Length: 277
Image 1 (cartoon, helix red, strand yellow):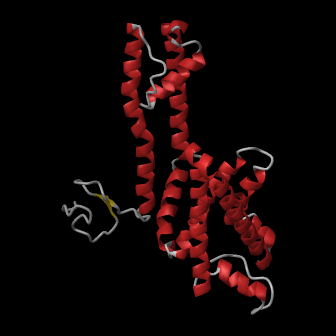
Image 2: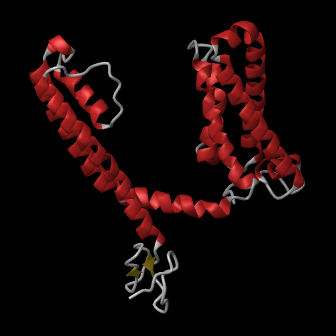
Image 3: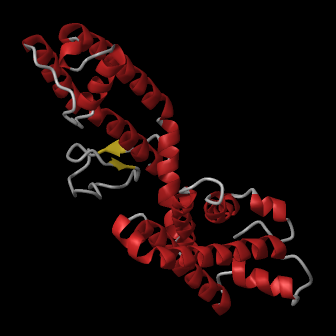
């Protein structure tokens, strides 16, 4: 439920506009949201297709006309949203208010910065309203669990990232010392770049060691990369598990699958069916 209220007396034009634009229980509100979602998807598709050189050369005028039309519609919608709420500034500074503003800004920005209309793809964020249209709010609890887990693991991940940065700096410096400019390692930053690409198992191949010592070091970094990638996943997974379990001192871990059973009276694991101790 939105914290904003309709401006104007009940039954007035502003109040009815508020009911249609911000409401989702009435037929008019649902129809407005569905039409808005369709317009958002079409506008983003227009921006994406316009970036294709062949399509732009053949249908550039059509894409330009559609973009102008979508911008006018979204601008009017944004103005009406501000007009029909009792506290326009509060809406303008809210999450969806800022997203709605950024949805119309790129086209106007392109008048001063060529190519700025590409940023209009930010409109795709407006489809988050589908949670309200399709009444998917009940699933927002899963998002809350994920947010809690990420917040709880931020310090552990920060320490992990600091350790990784230390490793890539040391390895990059060693590779610069071993290989040198002759094989592409022209500086320590270049070596650090190679270390990051190798440690993350991306492997662009634009720069590679050629000496035996460099190849040995590269092999060690590759193996280390497989071990390191699993660390943040494990940290977040552990926090998600902890966030989903209710606070209880009697949670028992299943010896077969590791599931935490909070029910004291349970004799079998609800996940795998194994007998609990």
